[in-house]
Image (cartoon, rainbow, N blue to C red; front, top):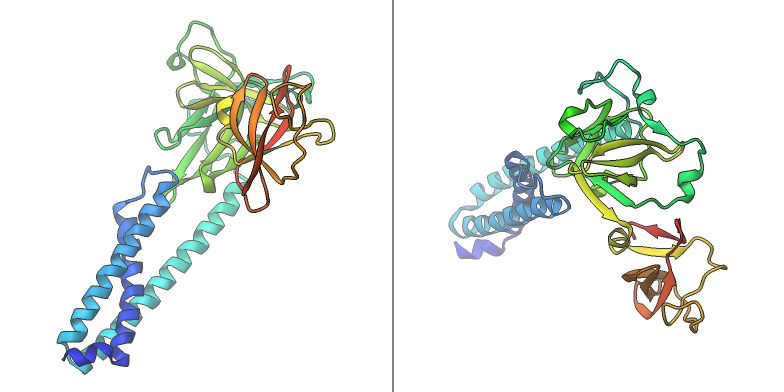
Length: 323
C-alpha cells in the first residue's frame, strides 16, 4: 500500500499529524513543567517539545499511510482534526486568560498580607527623601533585580538596626510572585505604592535603583515618582553596579545630544567621530568613559568611539533595555 503515501487523504494526514502532535508536545511540556526555572530559555524549551512532537507525528503518519487502508486513514484524519480543534481552543482560552491576568497585574492591588507586618503603616516605615527630585538626578550605585525563581517573595524592610541580621528584622511589606504555566513569572501581590525603575516581567525584567548598600541589606528606590526607598535582603537578588548593568543593555543615547559628542579617544580634547549613526551599543567601560559601537537602523556597525557616560553623580546617558 505504499502508493497510498502520496494520496491527498494521506497528505492531509501528514499535515494534521504535524499540527496535532505539535500541540500535544506543548501540552506535555506544560504538564511536566519543562520550562520551569529556565528564565528566557523556558519558552524555547517548551517550543522544542512541540517541534519534537510534530516530528514524531509526521513519522507515525507516514508509517500509517504505508500500512493502512483508505477508510482507516480517513477516520484518523477526523480524529486528528478533533485534536487540532480542541488544542487550538484550549490554547486560545489560556492566552485570553493570561492577557486578563496581565492587565490585572499591571495595576497590582494589595491583598491580604502574606508576610509579618508591624503595627505602623508600611508607608510610614519606609524612607522618603525630603527633596522629591533629588534621586531622579542622582544615579545611585546601580540596579538590583530580585531572584524570583528562587525567592517567591521579596520582603521590604523599614528602619534597620545595625549589627542585626536580616532574620532579626521584621518586614513591613512584600512583593509575591507567581509562575506562569509556560515559564516566567508575574506579580501576584504588591504594595499599591510600588513603582520600580523598570518592570517588564514578559522579559523577566524587574529592576530597582540602588541608593546604598551594607553587609546584609540594599536600599532601593521602590517608588520612582516620590523617591520612596526601602531595604531588601542583599542576597535575595542580583546587584549590578552601573558598569556591569550598562554593558548588558541594548543601546544608549545622550540625555542632551547637543551637549555631548562621540570621541575617538576617552579624552574631552580628542577628535570627535562624525559618522552618522542611529544606535550606540556599549562595549567597554573605563572610569567615566564608555566605548561604544555606532550602529545604523539595521544594527550594522558603522564605527566605534568613546562617550562620557557619567559626571560626578549624574548619569549623562539614557539606555534601552530592549530593541
